[in-house]
Amino acid sequence: MVMNRIVVVGGSVAGLRAVETLRLEGFEGAVTLVCGEPHLPYDRPPLTKQILTGEINAEQLCYRDHQWFERNAVDLCLGTPASALDISTGRVHLGSNSIPFDGLIVATGARPKSFSPRSSLRGIFTLRTVDDALAIKERMLPGVRMILVGAGFIGSEIASSAAACGVQVTIVELAEAAMIRAVGPQLGRILAGLHDEFGVNVVCNARVTGFGGKGSVEAVMLDGGWELPADIVVVGIGVDPNCEWLIGSGLRIEDGLACDRTLNAGPRNVYGAGDVVSWPNEWWGGVMRGQQWLVAADQGKHAARNLLAGPERATPFSTIPYFWTDQYGCRVQAAGRTDLGQLIAVAGGHRQRPFIGVYRHNGQLTGVVTINAPKAFAALRTCLHDHSSFDTAWEVAVKNCPPPD
Ligand SMILES: Cc1cc2nc3c(=O)[nH]c(=O)nc-3n(C[C@H](O)[C@H](O)[C@H](O)COP(=O)(O)OP(=O)(O)OC[C@H]3O[C@@H](n4cnc5c(N)ncnc54)[C@H](O)[C@@H]3O)c2cc1C
Image (cartoon, rainbow, N blue to C red; front, top):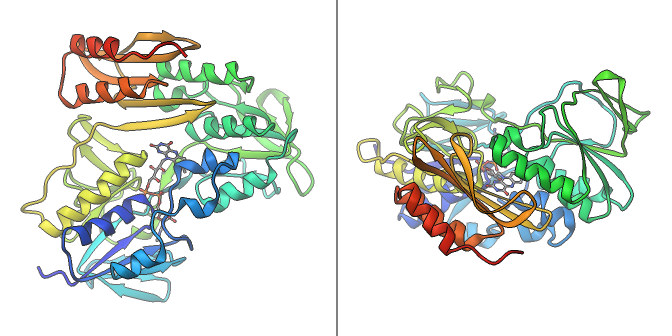
């Protein structure tokens, strides 16, 4: 099939990496990047970190400037969400307009889960976009009372940034401890300890039942009749994939856009990448949805290469999941499976850093995690890639262990 025009829908890290790769691989046809947001593609991880603390401003988030898109002949359709997909005619609909494609990459990512009970009070936010972050930042004044609903990555990072700005932070979490739903119980307990250590109040086993206030939020109501005073609330309880616009297209939607191991979505000219995609990850041993920056970036590149190669020459996308999070001046890095097996501390422990831990499952090395030990992390991640034995990883961890903080 001759491909003259490729459309990438979704202009964040997965979509941008796809566009860059199409040009790097020598594709000379037309490329269009469609994005629901009005901004040039920008980096999301700093939104909960340096944007909230004021270390960087919104302009510094952009990956590429307008000139780059012009130089690379990439048509930008910003602020125009795709509303439907017609595979038989090869068109992406943008409301009343539509654009044709010979090849398509779906990279529409995810959005914060909607929260029940709903409330129309001012001062209740979620955080996914730069506009969300700036609106929250504007209200983060010293002494303001902030309630975070959900103690996953988003809630925990906001807590850390807000506390650094003098905001009085309380986190409300449904589970028995902060972070355990995000990373499993063992690592979760270690990360939850950071909130304690830095004086952020965490209320666990607590369900939010409603919000109180007149016009603006003034309180968060909890099960059992408890009420917490609040000037600002941020809800961070997970994300849902943005795939409603694909309904009726014939593509399979199952926890996101269901792709095969090469990231192909069914038709030979349609691929998916990033947080919107679920795919069988060989390394993981099952179907998963990434939700991590590096996975999204790598999938964008891979989907572009496979689209150009065609299904006969497409290669599987198999990856060892990796994430980092910055909280309270600590850099946490983890790779592999933090949800199974036993976490064994090689160095450090509860409130002792640097921390280096390795996961063992059925005698094998299955995951690694470090806090403030980037060199050890890099070496251990190589062990995972090389399928090293658990004992080898242990030796590597000991050899690369930095002195105590
Ligand atoms: C605040 C925050 C902090 C994070 N921190 C970390 C971190 O420290 N480490 C880490 O590993 N990961 C982190 N992540 C996760 C990481 O940012 C995501 O995994 C990554 O952004 C996913 O990229 P994506 O391109 O798949 O999708 P997204 O970033 O979700 O972008 C999708 C884009 O598609 C657009 N879109 C949606 N629907 C349509 C449509 N119908 N038509 C056109 N466009 C559409 C959206 O507007 C959006 O711009 C963080 C995420 C957030 C929100």
